[in-house]
Length: 116
Image 1 (tube, rainbow, N blue to C red):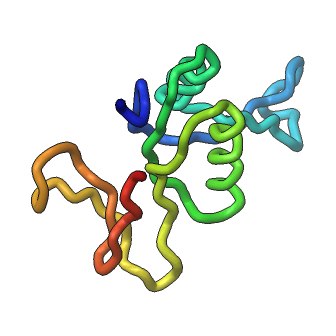
Image 2: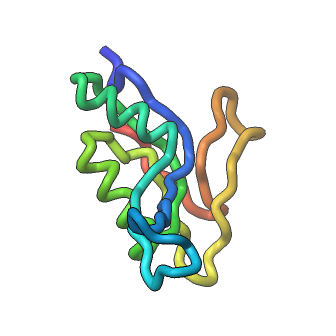
Image 3: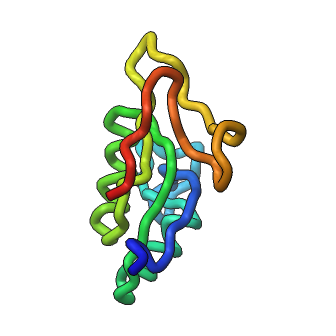
C-alpha cells in the first residue's frame, strides 16, 4: 500500500499583500499569506481525504517555520522537507547523478532521513 495518494515537489512562499482599500505607496504594513501552487493542490486534496505529501526546501528560521506550519495545518505530510543547514555547513544540493530515479535533496556529508 503506498504511503501517499499524491506527493508534490514545489516551493513554499510568503505573499505580502496591501490591506484592502489601500495603495502600496500609502501602507506601513502588509498582510502576510502563505502560498505556493503545488502545496495548495496537495492541501486541497488532503481536505478531500487524500494522503498528501510535499517536498520542498525552506530556510530554517521563523519565515520557513511559518510556511511549514501553515502547510501542516492543511493536513500535508512534510516528511520530505529540508531546512537550510546551520551556518558554516555545506549548502543543500539536488543529487541527480549518484542514484537512479528522481532527484533527492541532500547535503554534502549528511544523509537525509529516509521515509518510513
